[in-house]
Image (cartoon, rainbow, N blue to C red; front, side, top):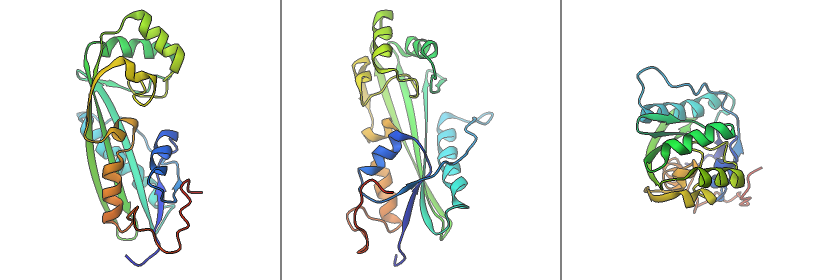
Length: 208
């Protein structure tokens, strides 16, 4: 691909931004303004895939001629969706629910080439087995880390890992919110190989 490729992350999530910075490709962040409500009859996997694509498409009109990454994660446990708790009480209730159970984090990523209109998506499921959690440990953990912006109310990349017994996932970055193995595969396919930057690229790892 001969054109100079600009990369856009359709997200304002600090977690996704920090993950994408690992690939050392300059990029910009854009808020997608997407309705993330699930559709009636939609599975958790279908929701994640639909929203990852929708986020990329939502930004495309404002960013012509770019590659756009959209990503979405849906967490669930025994048929119940686990959204970002937003507050302490909801986080306590979520951790009570996952205690001694296995939660599934379905993370989808989509890459849209706005020049051609081609869009490709990948879905990476992660299974997290939680330890049996006492009320004391739940309270202590939440007071220390305050993971109220994390689906499932536990940060696997932080102190939340002590609540977990086992993680089964082909890409550990998927659990944090952006599956970099899939992202690097898709970017390379669209002509933006992290190991083959364009000659003009000064390799500003943080983007703008």
